Amino acid sequence: MAVYHRLEWIPGQSPEVARAQERSGEVWGRVAHMGLTPCVKAYRGPLPSGARGIEFRTDVEPDPDGPPGVATWTGPRDGVVVEGDYAKIAVTVLRNGQVDE
Image (tube, rainbow, N blue to C red; front, top):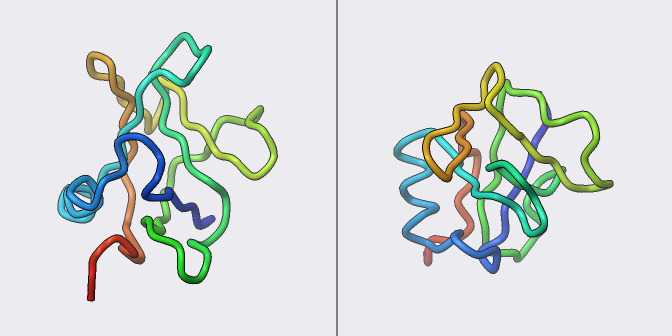
C-alpha cells in the first residue's frame, strides 16, 4: 500500500479538516481546476520533513493517468464514493503534521 500526503496550503486542507480526516478515516475532494468530476487529490510519497499536512495510506488505487508525483481518485468507481460535489476515499492517517505540538 502506497503512502500519500496533502499539504496544509491546499485549499480545504485546514487543521480542522485534518482532524476530521483522522476521526472519519476519509479524505474528500472537489472538482479540480479545469476538471469535470469530483476527485480526491494528493501528492505521492510521505509528508516531507517539516511540512504541514497529513500523510495517509489507502487501499484504493489512484487513477492510472495522473500527472507525475500526484495521485487522483476520480469517481464514482470501486472505492471512490461521489456525494454531491465531493469524491471520498477511505484512508488511514499515518501522521497529522497540522497539529501544533
